[in-house]
Amino acid sequence: MNQADKGATPVIAGSSIVDLRMWFDESPWRIAAGWSALAALLATGVAPAGLGRQVQTLLLLFVLVDPLWGSIWGLMSAPETLPSLQRSMQRSRIWLPYLRSGSPAARLFGMDGPSILALIYRVALPAIALAVAISLILHPAALWLTTAVIVISTAGWLHQQVESIPVRLLYGLVSVFLPWMLVILVLGAEANLTAQLLLAALWTCHLWAAYLLQTEDTKHLGLALLAASQIGIGVLLIGLRLPLWLVFVVLFFLPTWLAVYQNQSLDRVRFWWLAAMLLTGLALGSIA
Image (cartoon, rainbow, N blue to C red; front, side, top):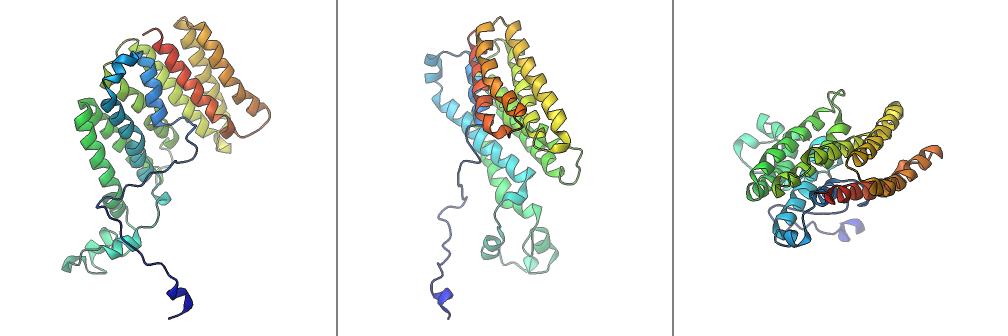
């Protein structure tokens, strides 16, 4: 036994059946599903006293739209970002005659190599099952929206084979529009419903534009869509007779165009986009 083997740390299996680990994915100060749910909550105009009686519902909402929906989307749309599961799969494989190495079933379920079915079974299925369970507890509409997330995430995976699928737009739907819709349906906040849907759609387009800007081929389209979504938000606030709120929203949009003028990365202004989204939700909630 060489010196490296003597110092090797033994691999200890996890203590749980389903291994659930959490971390911040990139910076938390950016438009994401959890913040979209908060913006929608502010837009409903529900009084703090009313929210105090729905703490459990709100916590389930956050867990569903952010960690769970985000996990489903991340696995299906970008499975290559997952750590290798082969060692775990080899360690825990079930030794049955029809799962022998080299058999068709072993190849199908990824026992002898990488397989999307193996990833779905070992990673996506637990997240989907937990999301469905929480949806059943939360609200009937949550189940339909969770199904929509699964379908959209599958389309995101197919983007690897079909480039025409607008994966960035799908990301915007999972991160902004669907969480916003869920808050409206679960809380029954139908006041200013048209304005809420318009605002959610505009912020979805805004996030879509932000990701189009990351690719040189779609940079001009991204800039045009970004400008259109910000102008649309301003027009919506004017139409709702909220000029004072518009002043602060415009101030939060200014760093974007300063960065564009200086040819700098827009990653540095993502916090201001988040602040503007929460502010527009608060503005809409002020007239609810």
